[in-house]
Length: 247
Length: 226
Image 1 (cartoon, rainbow over the protein chains, first blue to last red):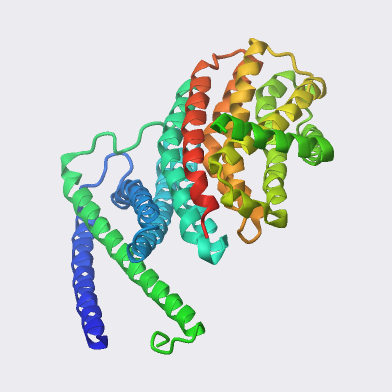
Image 2 (cartoon, chains in turn orange, brown):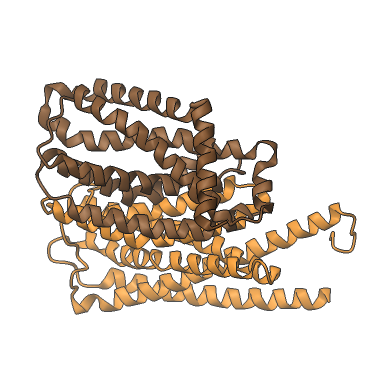
């Protein structure tokens, strides 16, 4: 029994390492293409941060919905299958943390780019505001997780995840209205409104690479959270006097 | 008993408790008056009538929001004394009726504060609205309901957490930002008369409907969280 578990863990970490190696290779190709793509006419080499900004922002709109899906599954399985519910909760934590990570990188690279392209670090235009709100929502999710009482963390955070996922499209619409009612911001558009075909390899390789990296970090975080759940269950059983489970 | 009768019972109980203690209304009222005076010191609204029209909608919304947050978690703390909340969970009544009753009660309290606060604002900030003032009678209730329905829900959610008074604004504010934005923009539209508040009213209405449904559906889950 113990042997089987450790064998399964070993083979899983083998696959994990293989995936990591593959990811790093794709990211290296992406880096090569990003650095060798033709220099942009107006911004020069500064525009290359776009190849890192774009995948992070796109992906940080994907992870929240993985988080919402996992939270719904948690609430669905909570009554019937405890083991599956715990897996869904671990996935929800992992995806929320990856959301915050990717959104932070997206914000940071976006600000670097804004400083270079527009001369300012930040402007309250529609996309930037929506994106900041996305980041705020998932930071508040992580705060709720750390503040809530041990027995109910999973439930309250699953409920908040559902509220946050409902809120994202409403936020998006409302802020678009807000910014179209007022005079159009001086700094509109963005370089992604149509790109030159010579940039496609750099964009695509980086998109694939950072998707694989996100999946890797998510899987790793999921495994850590599952281990933590097993450990705390074992601790609880040991406290109740079951030496078999206390190892 | 029908669902409406359950809601009415909860609402009547909350109103009676408030009538006898007057804790939350007095607290909110004085708190929002303090916010009004602090903002007046920070911005000197009487010197610049144009700026005062631009910012008053936002200031009043913020004052009401902060005041409401001080009262919302208290409204659930009342229910935890003597294990009343557990009794509610055992009672053969729909749990969401408890939520709807409490949200309605909080809505009435916050609206009462607004009724007092709006004239005070007009006097202290030298306000002469340039739009159609009657539209505020639609905007303020819709906006207040948006804040209160989510606020009541998240106050219940953070009831059994560590330092719940800190947690409530941290969770409530990010979720409420579309509602706050719509309420502020619509109020500013009425005060300045520069644009029509209609689009923002629609947004508020949609927000109210969506989040009222979500709260009513998920309330039982969070109350039975442990």
